[in-house]
Image (cartoon, rainbow, N blue to C red):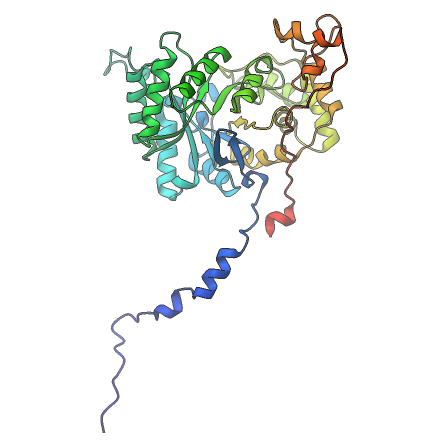
Length: 421
């Protein structure tokens, strides 16, 4: 009799590949199944712009507060990784930073987080060049005239360093941070396009720049087979409406997304209770981007918020969503609770009466020539819904119809039941 072979228990037992590899039928069924529903409205991603089809969360996480170097300006925050984890867990994928934020710590921390979590390709990452990002290091690098501005050299140095800090080989959106009034659009657009062709940058954005410069730059790019700007970032909120005069109409014409910074008024949109508490707090944050916000506007936002069972800040963000289709406000956060409050704004629907109340509390003169075209003779009120039919040169001579402006996205609410499922 031949003895049966004994199992060698000293060696780890290898699993049968058939036990671990999904069957072809399982793979096929999984391929055709719908993905799980997002946990929040942040997870319902939107096309960034008509000229950039990358999909992003409706609200962008601001990286200016990621890190602690600038906490005296923007407030103390919780662990940066906890903030980023909370945003990602809610389905958020759009993160904004800059070469200069928190003395370069913002890019370093975001890069470290993406690498440790293994999520780089799931994130749409925007950063910027132009600012003098090494100014804190003047003792070691005293000659910094080419570390700032829009020149090809400044661009090259900044992109090279951003890629290192972010621990990545590409940037989804690279912004010109501000116009330097020294560099021609030809040099800027050729330089940016070279980074696109090198696959170091996918899309181009511009920030804090006059409309005429953006149109000139895009015209040059399109005429010469270069990559145009697809995104504009600027200061816009319910109490600071300057972009509504020419910048936003320009973006709609050029097929560009609108990414507002200071979307919450630099932290100045407060309820009556919050205003009282802040007045009593000697350590209350004094933002360098703060603005004078009228009590009347805060009261209007709070009134609408109470009627809808929402927060005042959610109403302020909802106002922006209702103005144009491709709007992605940047929101800065200091706590995980701030992050978890972000999605509410995406599900709020404002009526025309709500928007009129906000406009009455925050009157806006678009100045010449927009106030010449729309209503100065009859004391008309300017807003972004006006069309050619509202041009007073027509209205004094004829009655015409004109197609309406493109409608914004419909509000998206995710119930607790949907989030659990």
